Image 1 (cartoon, rainbow, N blue to C red):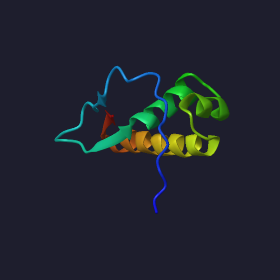
Image 2: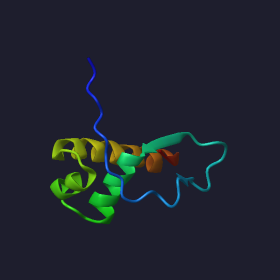
Image 3: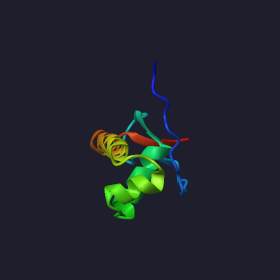
Image 4: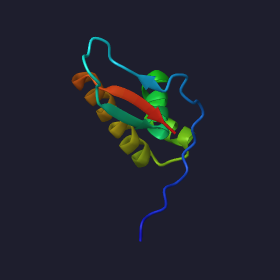
Length: 90
């Protein structure tokens, strides 16, 4: 039996939902970032909240928040290093 995914609180939707590299010939691949991953980056890196406080804002445990944040950072790093489009999806 699969665990039910707890609803995450997203307070700020992204103004821009797609970032594309310049100077890349052809059609770059896309890295998809979920809204909860976007929110984790916003809270931890842009707002500089501690993980426990950010987790509380999202309505998840600290461990869940850290897992979401790690996944988001890995995806963003992949996009930057490999010249991929970042697509934020709802």
